Image 1 (cartoon, rainbow, N blue to C red):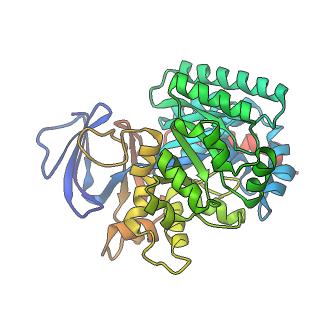
Image 2: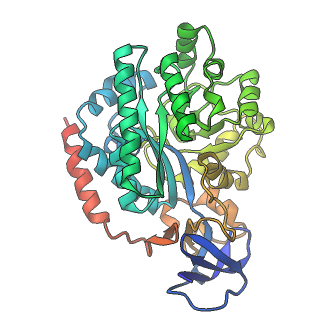
Length: 418
């Protein structure tokens, strides 16, 4: 075997050995026989599946703290879009690689990203050893010329990401939202998704104004509009989703649309509502978790996203709405399901995407319930070791390339200081 983690505690309280061969978990039992190339004394750790961040704009790590406490539209128009106009491909690489560093150091093993110069984010993910689905953000605003440019950029990005040749980093499609992409643009995306079997990743139901914009453009609510052009016939992940009525929730469930909860970003941007978690869950919708970008969060720590998701679900008088275990599932197995990744649980045959949490961390004391501790007490600083696809990318909180990455990202961010 390649790696053996001996006598490690699982979240359910069992103590086991975990064996890894290649990129898969090959054994998981009380005592795995034999030696391994790498042996880790797991007695100091709690093992859990690597976290799956289903909605990021990784390179926006360059804009952390750049435009806070502003409404979404004003934030985009006055701060983010003017700053993004100054970005180079190298800026995006180092911003994205810094995001990968932050994600690794807080236990995320897989992320799904939407941005431009997407091949640079894909290269950063590959160089960092992460698992990722990367797409080129597409916006046409109903303009035929923008539409043709967007189509060309989308097709080019698909080929560039494939050319990297990393099976852990795959392309997806990124039509931004129903209010920024025309019917013709969505039809192009649907055809491409079917042709190449690609995931479609977009924003949906983020603000009340978004809803009114789509109704004004199409005469339909966003969910109805997307269904009318066939978007839901493909594999999709829809980020935010805080403005759905009962009929829309029913349709989303029928079509198997995955909803990405972004609790911290939604609260910070004041989107005017919260995810209807109980209703979506009751309808059978697969709900997963994302951080959004570092400009609107302002971090990529999925532990804090788990906590905020669980707490926010209780605010209307239902403390049992999202138990701690469900919050963990949003961040692991549900996310893996949404992205089509054979991971998210620690089982024989699954991808060896594993994180080891330091039992000495104060958050795990007195240790009545480690699932509770993970959601309500922990943050990313408790992560000691990260294994992705059977390869150790962080151990003892050390990442080989961290120092260079921090320096380069800092250098790139200087152009935004005024």
